[in-house]
Amino acid sequence: MTVSDPVIEDVIATISRSATEIRQGLIGRRGTVDEENPSGETQVEADVWADDLLAERLAAIDGVGQYASEERAEIHDCGGDPDTESDTYAVALDPLDGSSNLKSNNSMGTIFGVYDAALPASGEAIVAAGYILYGPITTMVLATDETVSEYELTGGERTLVQRDVTLPDDPDVYGFGGRVPNWPDDFEAYAREIESELKLRYGGAMIGDVNQVLTYGGVFAYPGLEDRPEGKLRLQFEGNPIGYIIERAGGRSSNGQQSLLTVAPGELHDRTPVHVGNTALIERLEDRIE
Ligand code: P6P
Image 1 (cartoon, rainbow, N blue to C red):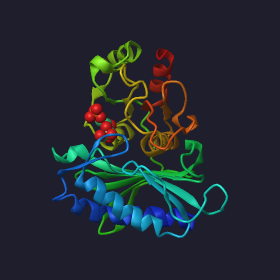
Image 2: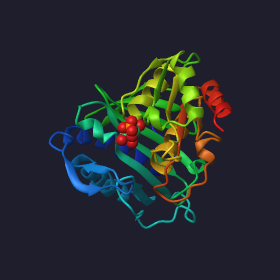
Image 3: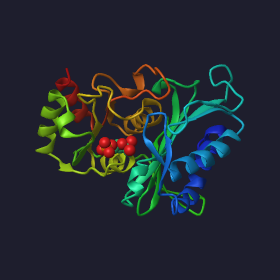
């Protein structure tokens, strides 16, 4: 199933066709490099390699005006302005979210958002978002204004395996990031409630944990912390795309007060608390967070 807009389809096809090559290219690139990303996190060789590979291919697409990623400080001008030119979009990517999981050979993923506005942009400007999950099988979850679909990827091809993906009505799992001593009291009280009701599923890479929530129903959160009220995850590259996907799948996203998609964009690498999952669970959180 292809997306009707040819530029957006080209972006999605480019990313999904690169997934098999990226998965293969992880081998031998698990070591850290002496550089940090703009968020001050140590990079692994695969972070830089995957970012360069995707930047080159996406920037070559006629209609991609900007490319930005969690791994590079500045927006890459690809020769178009999504604010003033029709059929021109910005692509924001986390090339290898959870790359620290490479060390333990656990799941991780690529997150992408296609914005019909110049970056940094509101999540309301997203026209398509998705993620590649490098699990036992390489899959892609793709959300557009029409539906949320899941594909299996192999050899550069994508095979639709589920259309109209929605969060199950009965939540089953939760995954919360950050460390307990750092959780604010209001989130800790909420977490204790959830822990008594749902099964813990936390793998340390957002995409693996979010995919559990999308599959079984529940909630994923990386909240604001005592020593870092904005939390750890980036709005442009993680919060907005995942918030878009979960809301298109019938759930809710929140920074603790409002939908992630309505949070003012600020700076390109700004962080945000992230809560995504079944609507009732997110509403309970918002009632708790002062
Ligand atoms: P922690 C991976 O580094 C990441 O950015 C997200 O994928 C993940 O949800 C989070 O950080 C995990 O952070 O503090 O639990 O290691």
